[in-house]
Length: 253
Length: 253
Image 1 (spheres, each protein chain N blue to C red):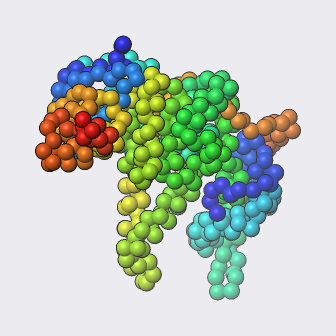
Image 2 (cartoon, rainbow over the protein chains, first blue to last red):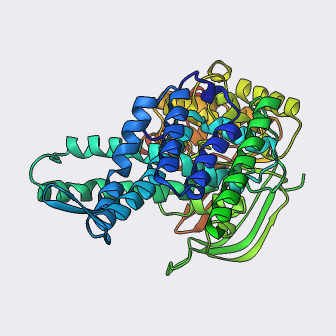
């Protein structure tokens, strides 16, 4: 699950800036908090955010899949190869501070991934465009952000079409790892070359629609904002500032 | 009447190309005319369209020499592949059509009116609430033309607009071009489809290897339509009828 998922949850109905602020708070909060228990509270906050968006199971599963390689690497580097004191777990010796470090770093990654997967799944790109347009954000920046947010679903859809076409021409996907690797070529090359060719035409098409005029675009249907949501965004900002202040105060102490 | 675009002895070479795509081209495009630029693949019709609308060399690069004067206030461009011309930022046809007008910062009411007029002109008002990504190629190309018209261009340039369409959709698209020109818009149509061009063009330019080899009102430049080829083979004296209606008129005489 990477990309927008239709729904009617509070996050789907919220102003896109509010959802982005919640995901951003998890991101900045992850680097402000330094103890395993604090970071894992943030992971729980990420899970709560996903639950609010009605996507708890899908978000947690995808976040775990995405952060598993990082977890493995952290466990090996910090847990197995970390310095003393060592804790014996069966035949394996673990570094206690290394494991704590791995828990902090891994927790940060998991929390951030959870937060942004939920934001991606609950912010409809069009509503984000309208919200940014209403705030007078230049179109170039809007396009950059929304293209980045939607690139994975679009590439996945395109890859599906290419895969079907190549399978019709006899491409076999199963078999040994070498055979699977060999099958990547007929998928990757058309995917990349096709995307580049289409980008050229889309740039021309967007320019032809006045995207490069520099005039302030008219927002036709901006999403509703509310005093409560604005207050929540300011509160999140204040919490982040406080978290960093606390972090630096502890570092000095 | 002031020409929308004037080209005098224009020579255009793409970056890295050994020979020019356009060589010594001189022509004008006037308001209210449908100028068909015909030629085989590689003759330079698409390049002429890019030069006449100002996209070459500004966007596509290359070298331009000669005189080019573009007095058209706004040029709308429609390319052959409709799905690469979607903004990817709109969730309904109405928003997609309104995108260009909104780019110029017009008041919301004016943008909505312009979009409604353009959709009515192209006969796609019933599609207003549909997701543009879920339309057929023919519907989508009409959405793209409507989106371009909603910007109020004085010149509409179309590059082989029916290349990806079925015959019915292609006929429907070509049929609206005289109406668009009738409203005072200059229409520049690059196409290899001489049969359909014969029905709508008020003037035809034929290109070969980047050079103009014929320029005039039909039937000049349209000697290769299916009807003209049959009439010539049947021994009909020149000028040959270019479409079925002209053939019927000739037979009646």
